Image (tube, rainbow, N blue to C red; front, side, top):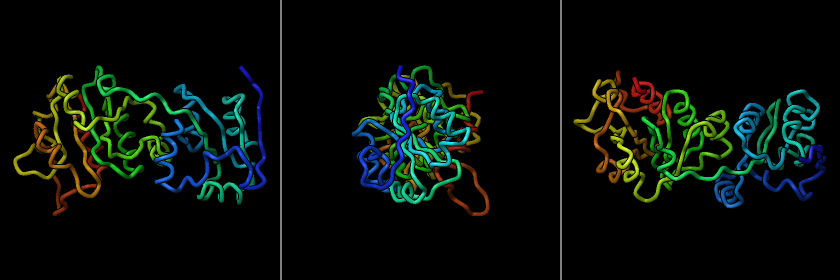
Amino acid sequence: MNREIHIIKLESLREPGPGLYYHLTDPQLRSKQEPEKGVFIAEGPKVVHFALKCGLKPLSLLMRQKFTEAAPGLEIIRLCPGIPVYTAEDSVLEELTGFRLQRSWVLCAMKRPSPLPVAEALQNARRAAVLEGITEPSNAGAIFRSAAALGVDAVLLTPDCCDPLHRRSVRVCMGAVFRIPWARTGEDLGFMELQKAGFRTFGMALQPGGFTLDDPALASENRIALFLGNEDSGLSEKVLHQCDGTVRIPMARGIDSLNVAVAAAVAFWQLRPR
């Protein structure tokens, strides 16, 4: 293995090399380019460390110049031998990436893991979350973090969901997306594979006649797949029609709904296997 360290000082944006880090705040650009190029961006020392621990392959690093001389930065560089380490003054890095820098700042371009088939993601799972049309990366990241922490064994995402390996999603979930199996569904939204695997399907929705989340009958189910809908419009009629039932959180003071990531965490805790 090549153990050399290649630190490359960038003097301007015209230099070749760090193209993967250009304009990280442009969601349309990132959502198109990163999957096509087979890469994603991990941000922050803890997330980068965890991704490396999970066996993901680093392609290059982008660091504040001061961070390359600090112990945490040197440790990350040591764990990534033989790849380019780009560094520059803060003003150049901020212009390159499009956002303000934090004190301990590092970005790592990494090879995207191979996508799992839905059946493989569901293997041995008792609790699954299915995200339909979740478009905000921060919400996706928060859901992944709660899922990993609260007993969910797999996450499925419909074709219109945001990329769970988006920089913000990975940062918010603190690398939980590397810990929990996940897969993209086809146009059937995962119902066929869920049925084959013996899951009962429930949609989080304000529907009359549905279960309340604290109903003991729910927690006693052997395999549950919980569908969570778009931040604005909720679950589609297509999903609600195919689910075995709906679930709602009992609430007070006239409040009828919660942010989808908050609702997911409450539901994951209540429905965890006993």
